[in-house]
Length: 155
Image (tube, rainbow, N blue to C red):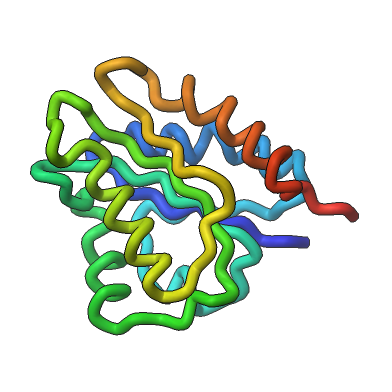
């Protein structure tokens, strides 16, 4: 069975809610799904990842949440050959922080690209000023992402 790994960077649980809400969509599409809410680089590179989804909220001045810092730091410092990785990204932010809106998601996107990973489709940026529950935006995006990128796994 194909493996989807969902990597979560969350401060107050919103990004984890997104991961838990979209998980059944990917299971229905034929994936075995694992959610990592304390992700490490080893979680990404230590075993096969057919597809990855990153759900990352932004804190402070565009920073990664505490539970995601070790992952991001390890990737920056150690690097990794991610040329085989295909991924999607849901970035959560607050547009009242104009200069750092979705900063963690945007930084992660650039970092993954730097190591050769290929993002499939567009990054979803969820604005807390417009969308109270991030999964209200993430669920339709995930459905569209699965369909537009032809991610359903044929058994």
